[in-house]
Structures are given as structure tokens and as C-alpha cells.
Length: 157
Image (cartoon, rainbow, N blue to C red; front, side, top):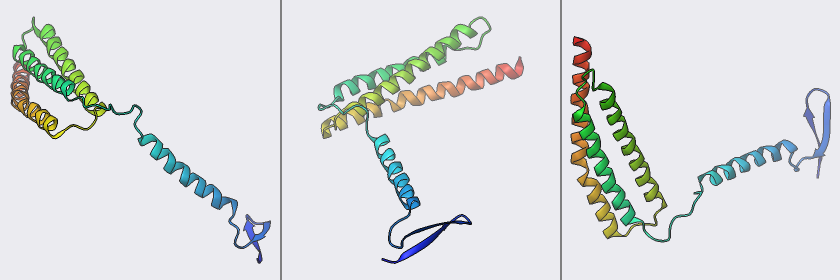
């Protein structure tokens, strides 16, 4: 092996063999390997999936979701913007919205925890979700109408 000199700074010279890597080489590779391992470790799930399918629980949660959407639509339709009813009606809408958010989170958590669904379970879940599209559209339409009503009350008042 040939003895080489490597310059570090202006006046520091360190002899080493030409085919031995420098300490900077090891630091760079360690950092690269560590960052890859950290990324892989952070992508691992914290709690293992269930061995059994949670399709019945998910279907129940989807039914709760449809009920929560209907509750939100009812609360929005009851909102009339009157001065005396403003606070209770607004709280009713907020309560229904929080219930809907919680139900969405519960359904997502149940689906994440479950084992893979069978084809029949998947079909049932998709059909249950598809049945909620109409009520969701009705809720969005009610929200649009109430935003228009509130805007008109604000402009005229």
C-alpha cells in the first residue's frame, strides 16, 4: 500500500494509506444509515393489526356516521339566525359537528386496526358508505342555504 498524505486545513497533514477511508467517510455513511433506519422505524405500526376482521364494528360505526350526518342536517335546518335562538342553535350545530368528527375518527381507527376484509365484507362496507352519500349531500346543501341566510341577515342587519 502506498502512503498518502491528506490535507486537513492549512497546516495539518495526516499520513494514511490511500485505500483506507477517512473518518469523514464513516461519519457520512453512519448518518445516512441512521437516517434510513430512523425512517423505517417511524413507519412501523405501533399496535399490531387484529387477527380477525372488524367488519361488523366498522359497519356499526358507519351506521353511527350516517346517524351523525342526519343529526348535523337537523341541527343546521333548525338554525334560523334569530337573535334569541342564535347561541343555542349554534351550539347545537357545533355539538352535532363534533359528534360527526368523533365518529369519523372512530371509523378510521377501526378500519386501521382490522385485519384485511373478505370480498363480501368489503362489498358490505362499500355499500354502507355509498348509502351515506345522499344524506351527506343533503347536509351540505343545508349548510349552503344557512350560510346564504346568515350572510343575508348580516348584510341587511
